[in-house]
Length: 72
Image 1 (cartoon, helix red, strand yellow):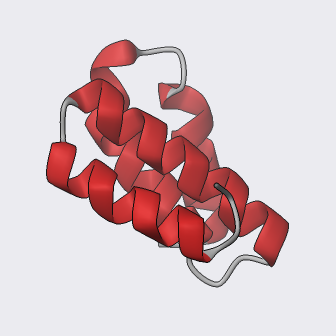
Image 2: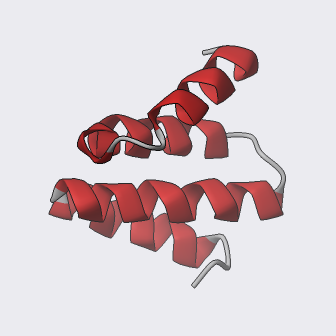
């Protein structure tokens, strides 16, 4: 997904709690290839939105990725 489209969709969905599953996916996508600080930022958001969505297995995987990135 192109960065501009990704950013646009992230911004439009952030005010909608029911969008948590999609926001988690988008933040994870945004973390790919990002510089370390941005990677931790997006992984943190992906993790939180996975928790909000009740996606326990996904949240556990993202938590591990966040730890490996030095975010926890």
